[in-house]
View 1: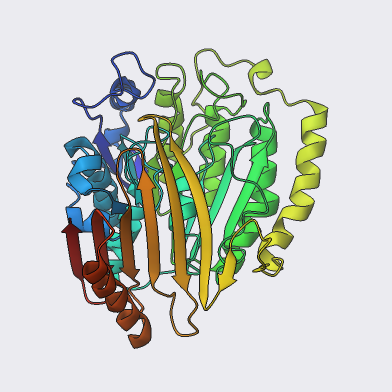
View 2: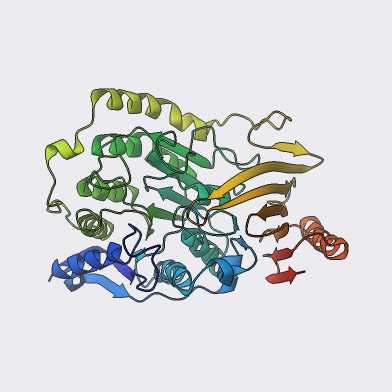
Length: 444
């Protein structure tokens, strides 16, 4: 009998009762073909590889990450909670030592869901990786964690959630935002003033193939991960960089995905995008499972693969070569934060970092205007205050006291809450005190 070099837990959740529409690329067949492929290939006959059922995330799990307006049940269905619960189950398999690695093959995805949620954007309602990670930290203590997002689309939601967190390194490798949704993810997006360089975006030109991705992994991602010294590495494992994906323009193969995963050696992988339902996902997922378990994946091949499928033009190779020369410097020596009034990334004003954001929810056709404020504090991450309104909700307030809050920031959080309750003006208030596990929800 074959035995996995690294024990692996696989969590499936196809979400039979949730789809944007019956023919939308984000539908249950995304995982059903993969499930059949893995069983036909005998992956579960390998000693050390086992299948598990997902858990269900709680409202409290989601509120460690998000301000959901008007509340969590209004923006997340049961399927979203099970998808996040599948990621949590993967984390618990690893954290308990039951498995060395785990792969949550779940849907709906989550990496476009930002700190504030009014609806769905980029097929995402809640950020399942972030919900999983904050569950880990709540149960197992403070961890330094690296999230490497290999989805073709920039993980703008994960970037937003961890913009101010120096303990979370977020690296996104994606098709250049000038050519693809969500139009963000550029190198100058480096994180908040107290987490500079902890956010690293690597925008790649359309047509990038195995050659380009593996060069970025070897020359940029791996040296940075080695320096960061994460307690856990998470792969936000989007698969829409595949050459056959119907909504993107890249040329990565199943072999390329498996090789990247072998180099990355993630503790946990969580499925994100990928919409070539029959021609790519079953083979990419098979390759990822074999790579994560330390087994030979050289025989994995898509039925329509040809050498031309992964051809990379010389100009793209030269562009990526130049990119690899400059990207590490943004992590090792990030430019100082420009907190002036003219700064595009936000300003420092009266002891608070302030930035204004206009966000569009493409799936639900919602427009949001938001002002985010983070208290400047030498002792902790600082209390967060967010004022937000959208075409779905009038003015709302979110206040978060971080898990490592000092007494001054905790007191400031309560002061903001009491003032808002006294003066009014907000339709909904969500107060999350992560230090003392207290949540206050208020609707007027």
